[in-house]
Length: 160
Image (cartoon, rainbow, N blue to C red; front, top):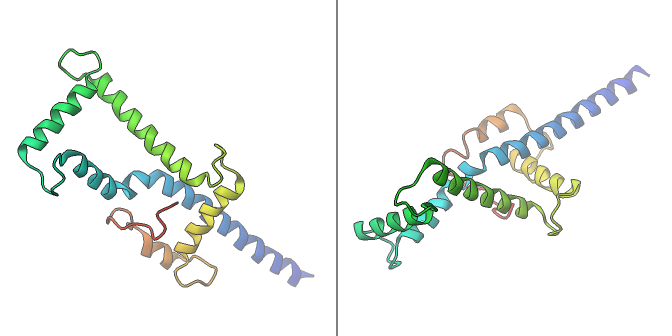
């Protein structure tokens, strides 16, 4: 009887640990998504500034881009960008990125995330963390991933 209770406790402990790691991973990835995509946003930004698409930036292209950006942000047309105007633009950009992340998770496109859609993301994260494929994520595997996003690495599956 004690042996059965002991096995149940081990299984329950492992299941709880796996669920906790999965949920924490989902929240961590969401929180770090800005860092995760910084490189791709920089390249998109470069393309936006590079008016003649030659892969190089001139001072004239930069000046034109800055003037255009300032005019877009200056919603009241007074020739200057206030904190409120700049903040509104940044909030709109953050919302666009959040929507894009949400839409990537919403695999069936119904506008809501089901437990399966959230679980799929957690399962994929667990799969990436479990580098030796033993069904357990240990401290060494977690430590090997620490700082991964800050070094500019990209996820293997970018469609997440």
